[in-house]
Structure formats: C-alpha cells, structure tokens
Length: 529
Image (cartoon, rainbow, N blue to C red):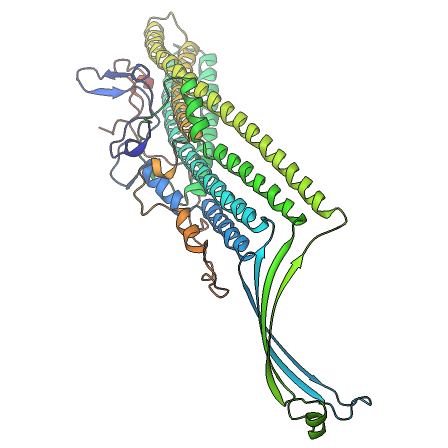
C-alpha cells in the first residue's frame, strides 16, 4: 500500500496512535469530549498555522543538503556523455609558423613556413572499453537516482522528527508552566496555613523545595524547546510558528515480516547499492579491454604557405609551390604485446572493487533489515507506552483527587500532595513523549520501506524534482560549447531568522492540577474560557 494522498491530507488529527491508545473524557456538566493530553499546539487564530505538509514542502524546495545531493547527481549524469565521447569521432585543428633566420645548409630553400591543418580521428574498435564504460556510467546514474530518493526520504524523516519534537517540547513546557503555577498556589496556601498554626515550618520548606525543583524543570524544558525550534529552522529553513497536529500515518505494515519484504523490494539505499554492484561488473569488462587491439581511422587535411620565402631557384630545382593543400587518409592498429603488467593490475583492481560492491549490498541489506525491525519494535513499544501512560494519567488524576480530599480531613500531608502532583506531571510528560516516539518510529518505518519519498507524500508545493529530466537532457549531447549557466544558490540561509525563545501560546491551566478543583479532566489544548 502506497501512502499517496492519504498521508499529509487536508484533515489533521492527533499524533497517530491506535484507537485504544487515544483517550477522551467529558468535562463535568457537558458532553464535549476533550483530549486527555497531547503534543499539539493549542487552537489559535492570532498566527497562521503551519502544517506538516507545509514544512515538508519548504524543506523539499529549499534545504541546501538536498540541493547539494541534486547537484551531485547532475554531475553524475555527465559521466555518460563523457564515456560516450571516447567512442565518438574527434576533430582537431592545428597550426604552425616557422622561420629560419640563418641556415648554412639551405641556400635556396624557403626560410618561412606556415601550416593550417584539420584532422579527423574515428575510433573503430576498442575491445569493448567504450561500450562497457557507457553501461557502467548509465548504471551509476540509476544508482545515483536511487540514492537521491534515499536522501529525500532522510530529509523528510528529519523534518517529521523536528516537527513533532517542537510539538512535544511545547506541550512539556506548558505542562511544566502549569505545574509551577500550581505549586506557587500550593506554597502560598501552605504559608497561609502556617501563619494560622495549621501547618509546620517543615511543610512550608517542602513546598518551597518542590517549587524550586519545578522551576528548574521548566527551565530545562524551555531550553529543550529552544533547541528543537532551532533544529527545525536548520532543517526546514524557517521558524516553526504555530504548528498543527500532524496527520495519521497510513500504509503501516501489519507485521514485521511484511515490513521486511517491502523494504527489501523498495528501500532506495539498497537499490542504489545493487546498482553500484552492477556497474562494477561493467568496470571489470572495461578494464579487460586494455589488452585488446585498438583500431581507428584518420583523415587529415592541411594548407601550407611559405610566406613569400620561396625563391625562384627553389621552385625550379625543388619543384615547390608557394602554397598548397595536402590530404592524408590512414588507419591505425594498436596491438598491445606487453605493458609491464598494467592491464592485469587494472582488471584485478576492478574485480576487487566489484567484490567490495557485492559485500556492500549485503551490508546495506543488513542495515535495512535492522532499521525496519528496530523501527517496527519502537513503534509497537511506543504504542504500548502510550496506553500505559494514559492509564497512569487517569490513575494519577484520581490519586491526586484522593490525596487532596484526605489532606482536607488530616490523613494526608502536604508532601503527599506534592508527590501526587509530581507523579501526574511525570505521567503526562511520558504520554506526550510516547506520542512523539510513536510518530517518529512509524514514519522511519515507512521511510525504510521506501514509502516516504517525495512522490508518496502528495507534496503540492510545485512540481516534484525529477533527476531523469537532466539525464535525458545531457546524455546524448555532442557539443563542446554547450555549458550550463553559472550555478546559483537555491538553499535558503537562516541567518536572518530571529533567535528562538521558549514562549508558547498560553492555554488554560490544567484543571486537575489546580488546588481545590478535582472535578474536571486534563485539557491542555482547550482555549481560555
């Protein structure tokens, strides 16, 4: 199953997890379902929303790393006309001008001589060197195109990872901000109760310590958010802004065996290694041609002129004309007899490189299989972590409610409340992180299977780059003067983008974490009322 237009469609959903891993609940007194916890940015209209498709299109069109890979492939395309040139006719012009100011042995001969010539050489037989060199170059073009697809898939994987990393850290920062606010309220309430003698100085110190710890965790989360946003800029080329939830990932395999089969059949890096192996076989045949005869024919024509230095005696005695045209036609046969062992060494070298290419295919296949199995296991593990974290969030909410209720009757201490709040925060962060891990692992799995390339992602930011267009343009060119325009930078610079901050769009505080309110569920994405 191909991703096609299903991936990155217009409708946006939460980070893709099975229905069992998604949890919703209803706010007290309403029938409106709300998400327990998520990594997406809150719904806001103040700033334009960036979708995952927008980020992928921008990275696809402006990332300098991908632009460099495309330029390298265009350079690789030129190896085909270079190889073909060795079997094409060659036309050379020659010119010379000679003068003899003094020569005691030539008293009547001309002292000046000018010559203009044109020579045509046509190779007839080269032992298969040209043919095999061309085939090797063509095969390497196909290998380069496969490698370029692999580079695109890697860029998309990096973009997706950077995208959901920003979403994750934004959610973690908001959760920590809520936690700090709750602990500030708790500390003030604890101090108030201490003033009236209801609590001890120990309770106040515990609240102060927990607030300081929460503030340090917030600072760490904010640093992570800045880092994730700067990494997004590095890959995509623009600041993230307000990010929408990514769409679900269709086309995921039903089991690991299905994923392995798809990867072996469609992984672009494995295909590139196989093409390189095939090209190395042509290199062996081309090297063997160094021991074969070489046959060529040549035609030459030249115009000579003695530049007025021909004396009447030279014309009468030597029969020379003041100028003229001469033409030659010949064939040349070169039969190697002994070359000091060079041809055999070149053949052995090519065979060793073929052996290396064969092993590289096996090595690449091993890497692909390991990547597929690892990504599949990571995806399945993340789904289980999501489910476990969801249960933990629900359980910790109930626990916090109970601890607060028990504290109100004196059976629980302030420390018990603080611990319950911290455990709820940890479970929410684990849930957010697991959602991110599941999405990244799922997309990495699709990329390893060869299902996350530009043609699969339904990118509509302009025509897709087709490396075959340039190859068709240059493969049969004969002209020696048909250069391309001077290259210009395509990848965008990011030095003008502002330094990122840890600011996140404000949302309502987590109702469960608010002191004294235990009736409503977690809803970090809800707009402020």
